[in-house]
Length: 457
Image 1 (cartoon, one colour):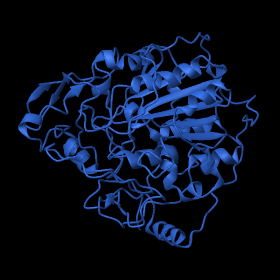
Image 2: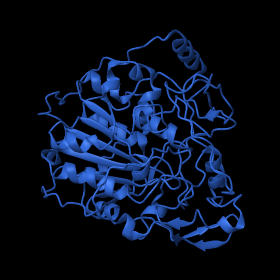
Image 3: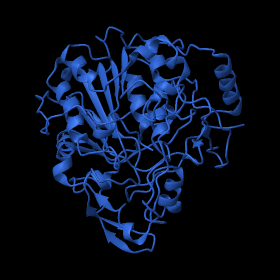
Image 4: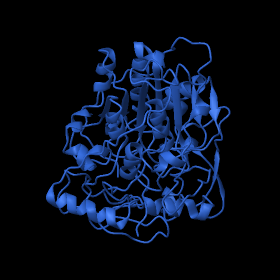
């Protein structure tokens, strides 16, 4: 029997991911995709005592959640020098030498490997010394970098005013597509597709990007991995059905929206790969472009739960199509909430989908052959977030799902995935602290991108 798994790297036109479902479920999904069947995933729920759909008797004051998903950074890379945080300024390379981290702009024109193969190499059985292995000598130091403070100051200001998660780990040991599935379903039973494989010699341009999802070309497949032993699994088409948090929100009559750049298949477009959402009425909740959330906030129509994906220019992703505008984008969303009526009852979570190949010195707590992955930054922003607090508790993407479940009267662990084992981020909040006025985050003005959309590999 196949157990949960996740996604790997694209290899010769194939996509690799780790399949977290059983083989029987995969077969059922394949059959469903053949006959076009659409299933309902709105399970009946028993309301916990004290929860109210009207929101007047919620166990916390939180009535809105905003999840901002950025791209490809580690704490060591993005938060160099943050007081109270476990941040290294040196690294150990593959030769066993100690090398100092050096400053590198967010908008470098090259990228680093961050597929599953890269995780295995970088992790090196817990020694955390493989980040530069296989690089040409002249590129040897590229992974050992940190972003300049002047580019990421808005993130620092958020961390200093609110909460920084010191032990936030991406749930998967791999790239973006499975990570984006984790943030809506708690797992990657569905495949994870890479736009292209990054070459370590940086001499060849990347191949033409491919996008996963139900709208992908019919010839596309993804590779899977058995997390219990690391063996290879089947290679299904990247359109799957499994329960998502949105199903439980629907059952509780909680509104939700997923903001993304265009409504085609894509590595950052998780709901395009979930069949019953893609071909059901709920797909109307997938909104393009992502900056629509700013208008929704200003016009008083913020959903109960919002997932916010960037376009490539505002993603923090290194390489082609990227820039240094990610902090301005995040600050624009945070400031929009902070200056609105929603500040009184909203929790904002900002995290990054994977490590992006950048060095981080903290070895992740391994659960199986595809979980957990490397550290990624986490910011918790709310009127009720602790002031300048560095959380040392172990968090993962399932922690945000667990918090969301409990906020909206959904029993914790209802997805029966990582939301069951993960904590609920309760250490980041103090609902008894004195209310404080919102202080706008200083950042360059957000400018919607006019550049072509380029996806993460």
